[in-house]
Image (tube, rainbow, N blue to C red):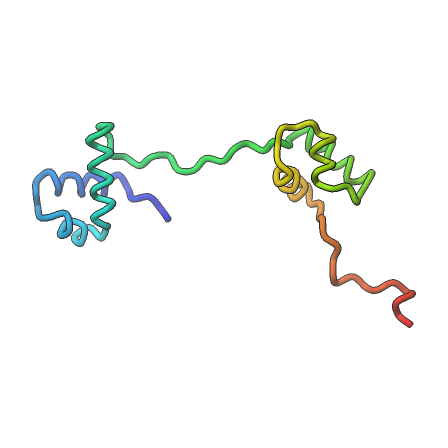
Length: 124
């Protein structure tokens, strides 16, 4: 969901300040909810600013550079190594999901493909 523009925020606040109508009428006029107007005015009252807050913000990955290449080396040396073993070897304070995401960035798959041809022994 996209944030509303500052222009729209200013027009809604101005309409509320000038008492153009009830909040319900203003919400209908601008195509927003009354709850959004309430939160917008509350934010202005508390902080003096009603502009949009910064959204989200992801944490930087734990495995980058040398640590990422070390993971690649360990997987090449021992393809059946588990995520927990990789995490333990790396001595990085992270979760197994962080190891999984790092392996995805490397292009390492953890599952065997169901679409490979059977071995010659299975063709009998």
